[in-house]
View 1 (cartoon, chains in turn orange, blue):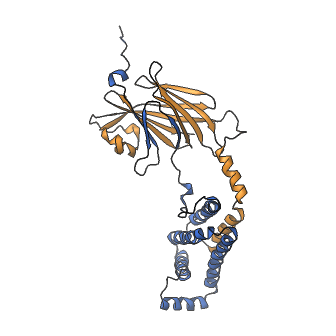
View 2 (tube, chains in turn brown, red):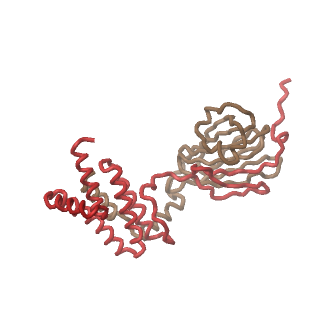
View 3 (cartoon, rainbow over the protein chains, first blue to last red):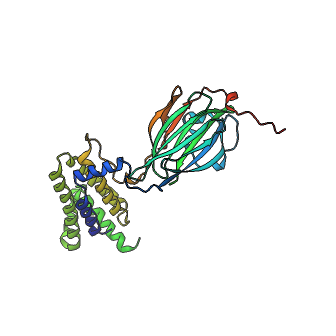
Length: 167
Length: 170
């Protein structure tokens, strides 16, 4: 790379570096929902339901690369199988439900889409006739990011729910 | 890499070492002689010093604390340039670093280690903002180098309760 490109890049960065006030406004905007975002904006969340058991089985190739499953409390289980994988398209205000293998109901909704493109999602896992299990989980995630909810008992093992924001 | 690029890379490397005072006395003398003979090399040296001077000048005019970030930033920029003198990545890394690092230096509540130069593009994990777990014991953690947050719930439901009853097909 030539020096001139170096200097140009530096100059541009210095010229357009935001002032403190501008930077604050930008940070504020990123923390608030996009006020004029059209209602049709939606997020698609992929939910993979895995079953971890003590059975010595080959790794389920459908799960893909999940190094987390070999670490921490996940490592207590010998194998994981993919039970289901669904995509939940979420619109603001709307909610989706997914019946889990253990009889509980996962409910997910899109709270808001922030100006930085991330989604604020709210999920709960409960059983209508039982005491609350997970009344509320609020997560902020950008497309491509994931989070895991694990530990529910199921058939001598556990359920691992992998949420991934697709868009 | 073609021959001319390689030559310039070596010259850049020498310039960087010269500016950083990493040359031995003898090596520096030789390099000064080379500088005296090469207007192009002198221009490059001048440009390199001007860039450093500009950043320092800017930093001193903005906020004293920003000065603490300038030298590490320049050092990282030079290291990046050494690694890839002829890739286009440096301009992006530099622009990203300055766009992210310098404004940050004006607003960070407490001074700390300088922000990594090119890590602004590294996606962080999702953020668990709130959990209401009722009577359920919940833990949030990340594992190893993964940035994916894990919410681990201690389930006291028995396996027998967990499995929904099978439907009798008959």
